Amino acid sequence: MAQAKTKSRAKTGAAKKQSARKPVAAKKTAPKPKAKAKAKEDKKGSLLEEFFMDSLKDIYWAEKALTKALPKMSKSATSPQLKEALDNHLEETLGQIERLEKVFEMMGKKAQGKKCEAMQGLVEEGEEIMAETKDDSSTRDAALIIAAQKVEHYEIATYGGLVQLAKTMNNSKVANVLASILSEEKKADELLTRIAEQGGVNEEASEEEGEKSGSVKDSILSVFSK
Ligand SMILES: [Fe+2]
Ligand SMILES: [Fe+2]
Image (tube, rainbow, N blue to C red; front, side, top):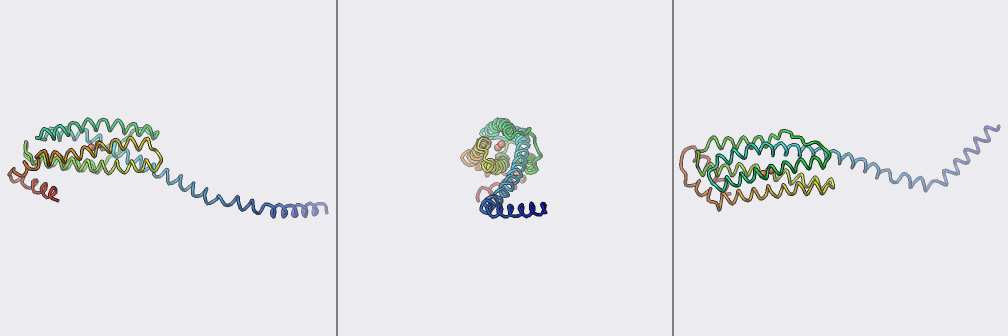
């Protein structure tokens, strides 16, 4: 009997409590979708960071590969302006590698490269140009400029994307470092265009004759006439 009384009192009490808590209970359940969204956001953030780190490793490898390719390109170039531009960009590239290492550090990760197939292909294309064009020819210079610009455009696309990702992750310090590299790549690209056009490389190449250089010359002219 006593047990039944307690049970019934408890039931009544619970019922009272429930009715009294109704509005509170409604408030408590309301933030649930927000919490779910937050968890989803966090997950999204970490996946984005993972992709960012992957891209960073890719460009770190690419820049290191360029420190080997740029001296070869400079050595095989004829135009003093082009040689100087490639040599200066090698110096810049060494500085960029240091800044990338700083970015790894800022992200709390160890600097590490991952083979970049795209850059590998572009470097190989540059090597082919050096092998297939005549020594001391402006045609080779014009072709080298295009090969170097393909590299710059790849870098511009990569750093442009990385700057945006860093901003999305609210990491303005990392975004600023990457933006400084992006700016150097853009300037290097513009300088190469000036050397080809105002520097007279393309014009001189158009006057050169020869079976082998002729075919490269034609392709160069078709690119620049667009
Ligand atoms: Fe670079
Ligand atoms: Fe570059």
